[in-house]
Length: 66
Image (cartoon, rainbow, N blue to C red):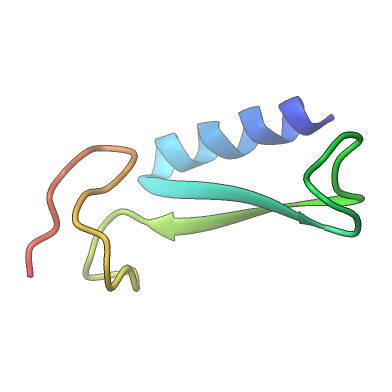
């Protein structure tokens, strides 16, 4: 289910220091929802990620150094 997928992705993101955003393909975000689910993981550490406009990690709330 979408909830199971979301719970799984959020647990992994938290465990390994990532932020995760959810989307989908096939259909729309309206009910009944997308045909397939997508989780995009981005690493919180600014030296390993590519968050050019981000200022804080959404997981650990640490400020990024420039």
